[in-house]
Length: 209
Ligand code: AP5
Image 1: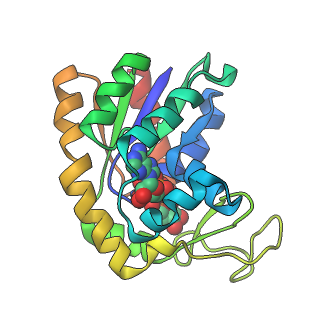
Image 2: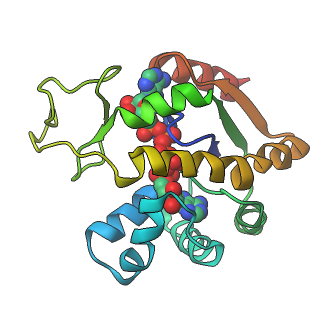
Image 3: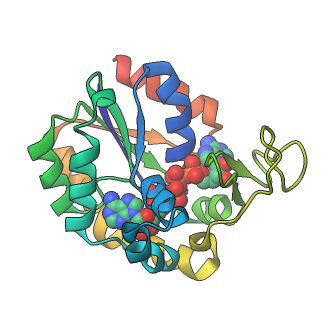
């Protein structure tokens, strides 16, 4: 099954994907994670996109589309995948239509106030990308990853100015995709405000029906 996760920054797409990939046995492909991994490894792509990610802007479509086209050719996608963070513009959605058939688009519905709370409290384990929240999902020992013990970090784009910019970019560039997929009839709206486990159950029930 080929699934797209759509929704505002911080709505819980990465958190849900980590649970859903185990349920479905398909890979979680996050364009944000791929960019961050390139930045961490100092690749040419990483150097090119570092400033864009820190400011909360979008990486140019042609760069992102070619990266996803390559990723979707890998063998682990043959039984399906969960695409998180792509497409983010109409041009990306149109390009995706030429690559594959999307079975379901999960649209995370969450208000701005909750988005800001989730993003400003998010912390990450840098080596694995494991996601925490200082209030709703804190690590056992404050500031450190439960499994590796490494210090947790805050993403550059989780600072207040970048959060504001990301929300604006979401409204202008990404929200129009809701109408795009509504017209295709494959979008499922999900209330993203309950706990991750409740969101997971709602998504699985919706996918089954
Ligand atoms: P990306 O990494 O995709 O960022 P995003 O879409 O803004 O999403 P986030 O990762 O911020 O949030 P999320 O929805 O995954 O929430 P999470 O589960 O972490 O992209 C980063 C950047 O890369 C972009 O700004 C852009 O520059 C570039 N980029 C990426 N894709 C691109 C594309 N296609 N085109 C162009 N540029 C692109 O949860 C957030 C917090 O909430 C966590 O602390 C978590 O613990 C907590 N939480 C999660 N769920 C719940 C819940 N149910 N209840 C309570 N707390 C919860």
